[in-house]
Length: 292
Ligand code: SAM
Image (cartoon, rainbow, N blue to C red; front, side, top):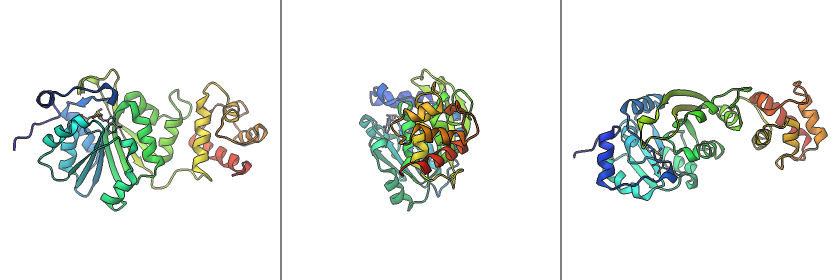
């Protein structure tokens, strides 16, 4: 069998020409053409022969070939049906890969992990379509998919947002969600020339290692995230006004003020100055004042 070696410009062009593939901008298709970057992703993802891996958006199967070599089983979820015959070709020598032609946001990943890995945590690895990075990461966390780690290529500024701390300019709801669920670590910055076609933005590989237990205790996770979302929805407003104007928070302004005062940070504090632990304290006092 003569497999075309992907992860380089010539092999990628050969496959694209063979199938007259037309890039779909709406699906965020930027295929990796750099073997060094793929090696770095594999090293950071730390895959071994016991692992079940889900790849989101395999494209023409470049990273899938690497994953199939290291893992026990890989399920790759690809939305673009024109890529399916290409994947059948580029992955033909691997009997441990299954391709699912579906929108990953519509797939029940929890059920998939239950079926393929008896509910044991899965490793997620992907060069993500940038237009839906945040919804994908949030749904992996919020749907309680059993995940051990998520090693993904994302837009550089999104990677920075994921690991930024209270007080910095790119700190926000995504940073807090990541901090609640995982420890983030930026593995590498990746320039546009490592992709075909080249994206307009810089990229970075980030590994999120899922916490065994959340770092803060809250009475209601839903309320914690409602408070966080409301605080950052209106960035220029004070925390008090942001929460008071939010439809998600059903507590009087007086009670909100009391909960904010208990943080000892002043009444005109803004959401971006609060750490995860302070958001947890705030949401617990709001919980006590609410009708539940
Ligand atoms: N993994 C390949 C690589 O590194 O060369 C391709 C990465 S490309 C940035 C993103 C891939 O995700 C594309 O193949 C695209 O068609 C696919 N994709 C986009 N939206 C998707 C969705 N909602 N569900 C599943 N796959 C999606």
